[in-house]
Amino acid sequence: MARFHRFGVLLAALLLSAGVYAGDVQVEGAWARATVPGQDMAMVYMSITSTQNATIVGVSSKVSRTAEMHTMEHKGGMMKMYEVKSISLPANERMDMSMHGYHLELAGLKAPLKAGETVPLTLNIEMADKRMVKVDVQAEIKPLVNTPSQK
Picture 1 (tube, helix red, strand yellow):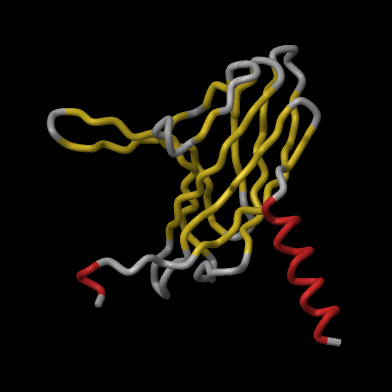
Picture 2 (picture 1 turned 60 degrees about the vertical axis):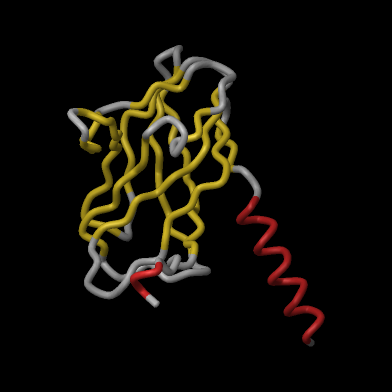
């Protein structure tokens, strides 16, 4: 029986680490950090590759009241974060959100995000040919990282 349990855990880990494909779009490595009770927002990161020019035009999740696309930039000696209405995906270029200053923000979480679970997301992507593609993603919830002030 334990052998089947280990196999199931291994299979689940492989499925979570595998990329999600939807037509011309591949999403890999979607993740967010676990949250603590009372924390009502979380950021989600992932890498996306499209075989043709495309644009992420919306995002949603059933675990939060709202889901938005955000970017960050350094201005006037401070890091500023703001919502964007779209994120461009150049053809055949891997766009790693964390490396390009983007993230998805889930606000109004309905429950804390727990390490080891997943968060369902739907990306709405407009392809170069104007076709709309919905990509369903399961973002892995990673454990909180202790900082020196938390010890």
